[in-house]
Image (cartoon, rainbow, N blue to C red):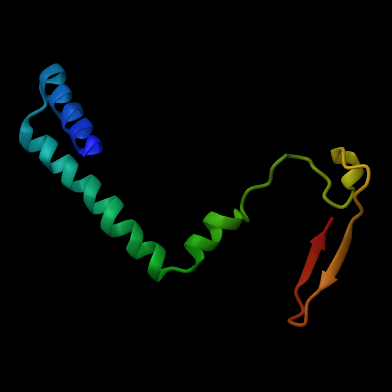
Length: 95
């Protein structure tokens, strides 16, 4: 209830301050609902790579220049680097 009334207050504020018509505000509101409540859940459901990339972030390399094979350079004195090979042939790096 509070979220809806807050959203309505934002719409009234935009209408009064910026002079945006109610029809334009309605179109923008419907577009927001369409994207967040229909399109994103469908993309998340039908494309399994999307949640995988959002959870594990394989494209992100942070911190830059970090050497994951030498954990002592990252301030982890008691850690050691080794690899585990699964039965599927996947090689996992472990500290």
